[in-house]
Image (cartoon, rainbow, N blue to C red; front, side):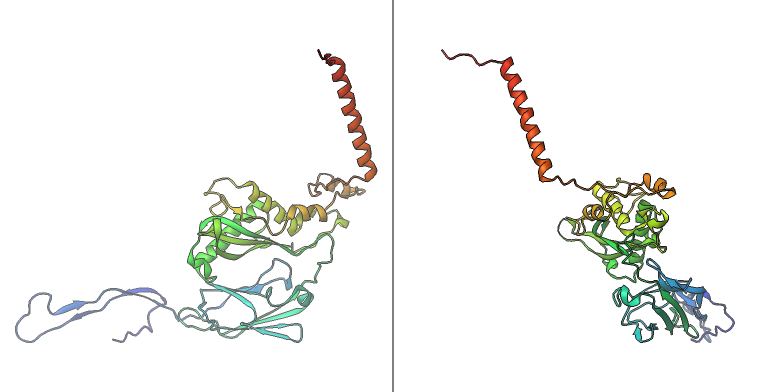
Length: 361
Protein backbone atom coordinates (compact mmCIF):
# COMPACT_ATOMS: atom_id res chain seq x y z
CA UNK A 1 0.00 0.00 0.00
CA UNK A 2 1.47 3.34 -1.04
CA UNK A 3 0.42 6.60 0.56
CA UNK A 4 1.03 9.84 -1.24
CA UNK A 5 2.09 12.21 1.54
CA UNK A 6 2.92 15.07 -0.79
CA UNK A 7 -0.05 17.13 0.38
CA UNK A 8 0.25 16.08 4.05
CA UNK A 9 1.94 18.40 6.53
CA UNK A 10 4.76 17.21 8.77
CA UNK A 11 3.66 16.04 12.20
CA UNK A 12 2.54 13.10 14.33
CA UNK A 13 -0.09 10.79 12.86
CA UNK A 14 -2.16 7.74 13.84
CA UNK A 15 -3.16 5.74 10.75
CA UNK A 16 -5.04 2.54 10.06
CA UNK A 17 -6.15 0.65 6.94
CA UNK A 18 -9.72 -0.43 6.31
CA UNK A 19 -10.55 -2.80 3.45
CA UNK A 20 -13.98 -3.69 2.08
CA UNK A 21 -14.92 -6.44 -0.38
CA UNK A 22 -17.98 -6.36 -2.67
CA UNK A 23 -18.76 -9.97 -3.64
CA UNK A 24 -20.92 -10.88 -6.60
CA UNK A 25 -24.03 -12.93 -5.99
CA UNK A 26 -25.13 -13.90 -2.50
CA UNK A 27 -24.90 -11.42 0.35
CA UNK A 28 -22.23 -12.56 2.87
CA UNK A 29 -22.83 -12.40 6.63
CA UNK A 30 -22.29 -9.02 8.24
CA UNK A 31 -18.65 -8.28 9.01
CA UNK A 32 -17.18 -10.86 6.67
CA UNK A 33 -16.65 -8.49 3.75
CA UNK A 34 -14.57 -5.86 5.68
CA UNK A 35 -11.46 -5.69 7.87
CA UNK A 36 -9.70 -2.91 9.82
CA UNK A 37 -6.06 -2.90 10.88
CA UNK A 38 -4.79 -1.67 14.29
CA UNK A 39 -3.66 1.94 14.58
CA UNK A 40 -0.08 2.65 13.57
CA UNK A 41 1.67 5.62 15.17
CA UNK A 42 4.25 7.55 13.19
CA UNK A 43 5.75 10.89 12.31
CA UNK A 44 6.26 12.66 9.03
CA UNK A 45 9.45 14.70 9.24
CA UNK A 46 10.98 16.14 6.08
CA UNK A 47 12.68 19.16 7.68
CA UNK A 48 16.43 18.99 8.33
CA UNK A 49 17.79 20.21 11.66
CA UNK A 50 19.30 23.69 11.82
CA UNK A 51 21.64 25.44 14.21
CA UNK A 52 19.77 26.99 17.13
CA UNK A 53 20.81 30.59 17.86
CA UNK A 54 23.45 32.50 15.97
CA UNK A 55 26.59 31.57 17.89
CA UNK A 56 27.73 28.27 19.44
CA UNK A 57 29.53 28.31 22.80
CA UNK A 58 31.70 30.02 23.86
CA UNK A 59 29.69 32.74 22.18
CA UNK A 60 32.04 35.55 23.22
CA UNK A 61 34.98 33.97 21.37
CA UNK A 62 37.00 33.39 24.57
CA UNK A 63 37.09 30.06 26.38
CA UNK A 64 37.48 30.50 30.14
CA UNK A 65 37.37 27.88 32.89
CA UNK A 66 33.80 26.67 33.25
CA UNK A 67 32.76 27.50 29.68
CA UNK A 68 31.31 24.99 27.24
CA UNK A 69 32.31 24.06 23.71
CA UNK A 70 28.84 23.27 22.43
CA UNK A 71 26.18 23.88 19.84
CA UNK A 72 22.41 23.37 19.91
CA UNK A 73 20.00 22.47 17.15
CA UNK A 74 16.34 23.14 16.41
CA UNK A 75 15.42 19.49 17.07
CA UNK A 76 16.81 16.32 18.59
CA UNK A 77 19.63 14.76 16.60
CA UNK A 78 20.98 11.23 16.12
CA UNK A 79 23.23 10.55 19.13
CA UNK A 80 23.57 6.78 18.82
CA UNK A 81 27.12 5.46 18.89
CA UNK A 82 29.15 5.19 16.80
CA UNK A 83 28.46 8.81 15.93
CA UNK A 84 27.48 9.36 12.33
CA UNK A 85 28.39 13.04 12.28
CA UNK A 86 31.89 14.35 11.63
CA UNK A 87 33.80 16.55 14.06
CA UNK A 88 37.16 18.20 13.40
CA UNK A 89 39.12 20.58 15.63
CA UNK A 90 42.24 22.56 14.79
CA UNK A 91 44.19 23.78 17.83
CA UNK A 92 46.78 26.41 17.05
CA UNK A 93 48.43 25.74 13.73
CA UNK A 94 49.59 22.15 13.99
CA UNK A 95 47.21 20.12 16.20
CA UNK A 96 44.35 18.45 14.31
CA UNK A 97 41.78 16.34 16.19
CA UNK A 98 38.65 14.42 15.21
CA UNK A 99 35.67 12.95 17.05
CA UNK A 100 37.73 9.95 18.18
CA UNK A 101 40.32 12.17 19.90
CA UNK A 102 38.02 14.22 22.13
CA UNK A 103 35.18 13.62 24.59
CA UNK A 104 31.76 14.23 23.05
CA UNK A 105 28.46 14.43 24.90
CA UNK A 106 25.52 14.19 22.51
CA UNK A 107 22.13 14.52 24.16
CA UNK A 108 18.79 15.44 22.60
CA UNK A 109 19.42 18.66 20.62
CA UNK A 110 22.82 19.50 22.11
CA UNK A 111 26.35 18.51 21.11
CA UNK A 112 29.13 19.28 23.60
CA UNK A 113 32.89 18.77 23.16
CA UNK A 114 35.57 18.60 25.84
CA UNK A 115 39.34 18.75 25.39
CA UNK A 116 40.01 18.16 29.12
CA UNK A 117 41.29 14.59 28.66
CA UNK A 118 43.08 15.34 25.38
CA UNK A 119 45.29 18.39 25.87
CA UNK A 120 46.70 20.08 28.96
CA UNK A 121 45.92 23.63 30.00
CA UNK A 122 49.51 24.59 29.20
CA UNK A 123 49.13 23.39 25.60
CA UNK A 124 45.75 25.09 25.13
CA UNK A 125 46.72 28.38 26.80
CA UNK A 126 46.23 31.27 24.40
CA UNK A 127 45.61 28.96 21.44
CA UNK A 128 43.09 29.57 18.67
CA UNK A 129 40.65 26.67 18.28
CA UNK A 130 38.46 26.07 15.22
CA UNK A 131 35.60 23.55 15.42
CA UNK A 132 33.87 22.05 12.37
CA UNK A 133 30.78 19.81 12.58
CA UNK A 134 29.25 18.13 9.55
CA UNK A 135 26.62 15.53 8.58
CA UNK A 136 24.32 16.10 11.56
CA UNK A 137 21.09 14.11 11.16
CA UNK A 138 17.76 14.07 12.98
CA UNK A 139 15.90 10.86 13.86
CA UNK A 140 14.22 10.84 10.45
CA UNK A 141 17.69 10.91 8.82
CA UNK A 142 17.29 14.44 7.50
CA UNK A 143 20.79 15.88 7.19
CA UNK A 144 21.73 19.40 8.23
CA UNK A 145 22.85 21.28 5.11
CA UNK A 146 26.35 22.70 5.10
CA UNK A 147 28.96 22.78 7.86
CA UNK A 148 28.82 24.45 11.28
CA UNK A 149 32.12 26.16 12.06
CA UNK A 150 33.20 28.50 14.84
CA UNK A 151 36.45 29.77 16.31
CA UNK A 152 37.48 30.89 19.81
CA UNK A 153 40.60 31.57 21.85
CA UNK A 154 41.57 29.66 24.99
CA UNK A 155 42.17 31.94 27.94
CA UNK A 156 45.79 32.42 28.96
CA UNK A 157 46.74 29.93 31.66
CA UNK A 158 46.83 31.68 35.03
CA UNK A 159 47.82 28.81 37.33
CA UNK A 160 50.79 30.86 38.51
CA UNK A 161 48.50 33.54 39.95
CA UNK A 162 48.78 33.20 43.72
CA UNK A 163 45.22 34.41 44.22
CA UNK A 164 43.88 31.58 42.02
CA UNK A 165 45.81 28.48 43.22
CA UNK A 166 43.92 26.05 41.00
CA UNK A 167 41.58 26.27 38.05
CA UNK A 168 39.56 23.36 39.38
CA UNK A 169 39.21 21.26 42.53
CA UNK A 170 37.48 17.90 42.77
CA UNK A 171 35.33 16.64 45.64
CA UNK A 172 35.30 12.92 45.00
CA UNK A 173 33.18 10.00 46.19
CA UNK A 174 30.03 11.93 47.00
CA UNK A 175 27.43 9.28 47.91
CA UNK A 176 23.91 10.28 46.94
CA UNK A 177 20.62 9.01 48.33
CA UNK A 178 19.71 8.13 44.72
CA UNK A 179 19.79 4.36 44.04
CA UNK A 180 22.06 3.27 41.22
CA UNK A 181 20.37 3.03 37.83
CA UNK A 182 22.02 1.13 34.99
CA UNK A 183 21.01 3.96 32.64
CA UNK A 184 23.41 6.27 34.51
CA UNK A 185 26.29 4.39 32.87
CA UNK A 186 25.16 5.74 29.48
CA UNK A 187 26.08 9.43 29.26
CA UNK A 188 23.68 9.83 26.35
CA UNK A 189 20.65 8.54 28.28
CA UNK A 190 17.85 10.74 29.54
CA UNK A 191 18.32 9.41 33.08
CA UNK A 192 21.98 10.46 33.10
CA UNK A 193 21.14 13.94 31.83
CA UNK A 194 18.44 14.44 34.46
CA UNK A 195 20.77 13.26 37.23
CA UNK A 196 23.68 15.51 36.19
CA UNK A 197 21.53 18.60 35.58
CA UNK A 198 19.47 18.16 38.75
CA UNK A 199 22.48 17.52 40.97
CA UNK A 200 24.40 20.46 39.49
CA UNK A 201 21.46 22.74 40.25
CA UNK A 202 21.34 21.55 43.89
CA UNK A 203 25.10 21.99 44.42
CA UNK A 204 24.96 25.44 42.81
CA UNK A 205 22.14 26.38 45.18
CA UNK A 206 24.11 25.27 48.24
CA UNK A 207 27.17 27.21 47.10
CA UNK A 208 25.12 30.19 45.92
CA UNK A 209 26.97 30.03 42.61
CA UNK A 210 26.07 29.64 38.97
CA UNK A 211 25.89 26.03 37.74
CA UNK A 212 28.53 26.86 35.12
CA UNK A 213 31.07 26.93 37.97
CA UNK A 214 30.83 23.17 38.46
CA UNK A 215 30.50 19.88 36.63
CA UNK A 216 29.31 16.41 37.67
CA UNK A 217 31.55 13.56 36.52
CA UNK A 218 32.60 10.06 37.53
CA UNK A 219 29.03 8.80 37.95
CA UNK A 220 29.32 5.21 39.16
CA UNK A 221 27.75 2.46 41.24
CA UNK A 222 28.97 2.61 44.83
CA UNK A 223 30.95 -0.14 46.53
CA UNK A 224 31.26 -1.31 50.12
CA UNK A 225 28.91 0.62 52.41
CA UNK A 226 27.72 2.63 49.39
CA UNK A 227 26.83 -0.42 47.29
CA UNK A 228 23.67 0.12 45.28
CA UNK A 229 23.86 3.89 45.62
CA UNK A 230 25.01 6.47 43.09
CA UNK A 231 28.47 7.95 43.67
CA UNK A 232 29.72 11.04 41.80
CA UNK A 233 32.58 13.52 41.62
CA UNK A 234 31.83 17.24 41.84
CA UNK A 235 34.40 19.44 40.09
CA UNK A 236 34.48 23.11 41.06
CA UNK A 237 35.79 25.41 38.33
CA UNK A 238 37.50 28.77 38.38
CA UNK A 239 35.50 31.90 37.68
CA UNK A 240 35.40 33.21 34.14
CA UNK A 241 36.85 36.47 35.46
CA UNK A 242 40.16 36.68 37.25
CA UNK A 243 40.21 38.34 40.63
CA UNK A 244 43.21 39.75 42.48
CA UNK A 245 43.85 41.08 45.95
CA UNK A 246 45.45 44.11 44.33
CA UNK A 247 41.91 45.32 43.67
CA UNK A 248 40.54 44.28 47.04
CA UNK A 249 38.55 41.34 45.65
CA UNK A 250 37.57 38.56 48.02
CA UNK A 251 39.00 35.05 47.75
CA UNK A 252 35.60 33.36 47.98
CA UNK A 253 35.70 33.09 44.19
CA UNK A 254 38.33 30.31 44.10
CA UNK A 255 37.40 26.69 43.36
CA UNK A 256 39.22 25.67 46.55
CA UNK A 257 36.90 27.75 48.68
CA UNK A 258 33.79 26.40 46.95
CA UNK A 259 35.07 22.83 47.41
CA UNK A 260 35.82 23.60 51.06
CA UNK A 261 32.23 24.79 51.61
CA UNK A 262 30.73 21.78 49.82
CA UNK A 263 32.92 19.28 51.68
CA UNK A 264 32.06 20.95 54.99
CA UNK A 265 28.32 20.81 54.26
CA UNK A 266 28.56 17.14 53.32
CA UNK A 267 30.51 16.37 56.49
CA UNK A 268 27.90 18.16 58.60
CA UNK A 269 25.07 16.48 56.72
CA UNK A 270 22.23 18.10 54.83
CA UNK A 271 18.66 18.13 56.05
CA UNK A 272 16.54 15.09 55.28
CA UNK A 273 14.50 17.14 52.84
CA UNK A 274 14.01 15.19 49.63
CA UNK A 275 11.72 17.88 48.29
CA UNK A 276 14.43 20.55 48.40
CA UNK A 277 17.36 18.17 47.86
CA UNK A 278 16.11 15.13 45.92
CA UNK A 279 19.72 14.12 45.21
CA UNK A 280 21.78 15.62 48.05
CA UNK A 281 19.43 14.80 50.92
CA UNK A 282 21.49 12.60 53.31
CA UNK A 283 24.42 12.73 50.87
CA UNK A 284 27.86 12.20 52.40
CA UNK A 285 31.49 11.61 51.56
CA UNK A 286 32.60 8.01 51.37
CA UNK A 287 35.64 7.34 53.54
CA UNK A 288 38.40 9.90 54.00
CA UNK A 289 38.38 12.66 51.37
CA UNK A 290 41.30 12.49 48.91
CA UNK A 291 41.94 16.17 49.37
CA UNK A 292 42.24 17.41 52.96
CA UNK A 293 40.77 20.77 52.10
CA UNK A 294 40.90 22.15 55.63
CA UNK A 295 44.68 21.62 55.79
CA UNK A 296 45.26 22.93 52.26
CA UNK A 297 43.04 25.91 53.00
CA UNK A 298 45.08 26.92 56.05
CA UNK A 299 48.32 26.55 54.11
CA UNK A 300 47.19 28.58 51.12
CA UNK A 301 45.32 31.29 53.00
CA UNK A 302 47.06 32.32 56.24
CA UNK A 303 45.64 35.40 58.03
CA UNK A 304 45.79 38.30 55.60
CA UNK A 305 47.88 41.38 56.45
CA UNK A 306 46.05 44.65 56.94
CA UNK A 307 45.62 46.58 53.71
CA UNK A 308 45.19 50.34 53.56
CA UNK A 309 42.11 52.03 52.18
CA UNK A 310 38.92 50.37 50.89
CA UNK A 311 40.65 47.02 50.42
CA UNK A 312 41.28 46.75 54.18
CA UNK A 313 37.64 47.54 54.94
CA UNK A 314 36.43 44.97 52.43
CA UNK A 315 38.69 42.18 53.73
CA UNK A 316 38.25 43.01 57.42
CA UNK A 317 34.98 41.07 57.60
CA UNK A 318 36.12 38.23 55.36
CA UNK A 319 35.92 34.68 56.66
CA UNK A 320 38.56 33.50 54.21
CA UNK A 321 41.56 33.28 56.54
CA UNK A 322 41.75 29.95 58.35
CA UNK A 323 43.38 29.53 61.77
CA UNK A 324 46.97 28.30 61.46
CA UNK A 325 48.35 26.13 64.30
CA UNK A 326 50.69 28.12 66.60
CA UNK A 327 54.29 26.90 66.80
CA UNK A 328 56.11 27.58 70.10
CA UNK A 329 59.86 28.02 70.36
CA UNK A 330 61.97 25.95 72.78
CA UNK A 331 62.33 29.00 75.07
CA UNK A 332 58.57 29.51 75.18
CA UNK A 333 58.03 25.83 75.99
CA UNK A 334 60.58 25.97 78.84
CA UNK A 335 59.00 29.06 80.39
CA UNK A 336 55.55 27.49 80.14
CA UNK A 337 56.68 24.30 81.86
CA UNK A 338 58.39 26.33 84.63
CA UNK A 339 55.20 28.32 85.28
CA UNK A 340 53.16 25.12 85.44
CA UNK A 341 55.64 23.60 87.93
CA UNK A 342 55.48 26.70 90.17
CA UNK A 343 51.68 26.66 90.08
CA UNK A 344 51.60 22.97 91.04
CA UNK A 345 54.02 23.65 93.92
CA UNK A 346 51.88 26.48 95.30
CA UNK A 347 48.74 24.35 95.18
CA UNK A 348 50.54 21.49 96.99
CA UNK A 349 51.83 23.86 99.72
CA UNK A 350 48.36 25.30 100.37
CA UNK A 351 46.87 21.83 100.54
CA UNK A 352 49.53 20.74 103.09
CA UNK A 353 48.82 23.73 105.34
CA UNK A 354 45.08 23.10 105.33
CA UNK A 355 45.46 19.36 105.86
CA UNK A 356 48.58 18.71 107.99
CA UNK A 357 49.74 15.13 108.18
CA UNK A 358 48.71 13.24 111.37
CA UNK A 359 51.51 11.65 113.45
CA UNK A 360 51.79 7.89 113.30
CA UNK A 361 50.89 6.02 116.51
